[in-house]
Length: 118
Image 1: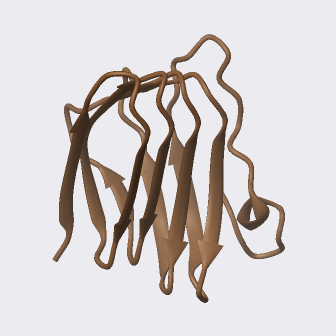
Image 2: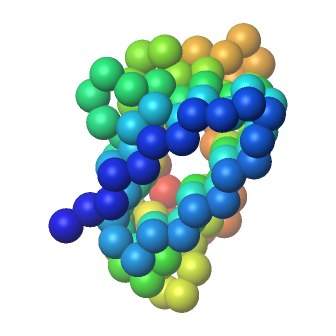
């Protein structure tokens, strides 16, 4: 079972914790930051976009799961940070970001042996 999450708002900041995996719908926050912690995978639904000029922080909590935000049209203008908590393990990260200033995500799971993108 997964939680469906869709956020649309102005220059808002959104912080979400889910005790289940998350299937992301549209996330449109203008300049707001988006923080998401999930006890399971974080996956973007087909036909959706993530639109923010703010930062995005993604955390896998308690389990070993993937982060997959690979849809065309994603625009993340701020930094993307990946983290693990409570024994969580990020197995794989897939990110598509069409922002002009896009850069690779950062975070401890991406610099620790055996963790991060494949």
